[in-house]
Image 1 (cartoon, rainbow, N blue to C red):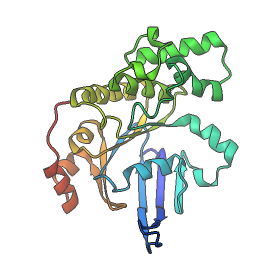
Image 2: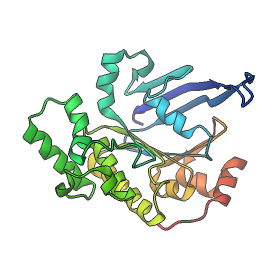
Image 3: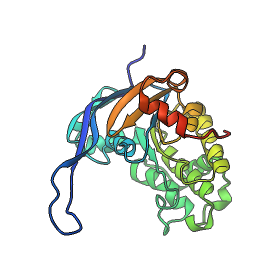
Image 4: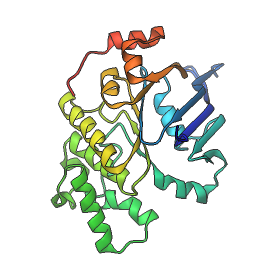
Length: 265
């Protein structure tokens, strides 16, 4: 057994309740992620499923330190991410990227495609302009787009094309680990199926490890090696994809399977 690429130990994120509509301070808290422990092995896709508000996206952002946990530990290739300073975290981010849910909101409308995909290379890599442009063209080919789109802007593309641009940006630094945060939920079913197939193809081509977040059990079942089920901030079941989808142990997992329609992928 290989050492896990990512180890999550007793991770917790608590948000205090804000003010009510009448201005009175509400008492209590929301445990968005509640004492979650999880391992992700190199080269696997761990599917993370649950209904809206279950804590899936919060967990995805926590493991990348896009938001800070209240307690717990996160290790990436054995390195303690929560102990990493700004400089070390900047270096580690080369190997950890995210694909966002909204393929329009995640792209800067003032930047053209070349600038969007080049941005990580400008920040992290010392490359000549011709070398950078060659890398960008290579990334576009990998996601099924043509270099002729480089001067165009996000509003000129369909949702599926914008998501492909976002995926190309996530791949720019050749990361080892990608959090895919509901990357097909804002797309039509047929377009979403194309993106799921693209992610599967890219995993083989680039040797990627995914945390694939979704509320759709059929999508996760198609793509994932293992499945983890979240409910109200807690991890209620983790197992092999076949076991989770054919012999679920937790009532909530069974309810998810019964509630989600089948889709063609």
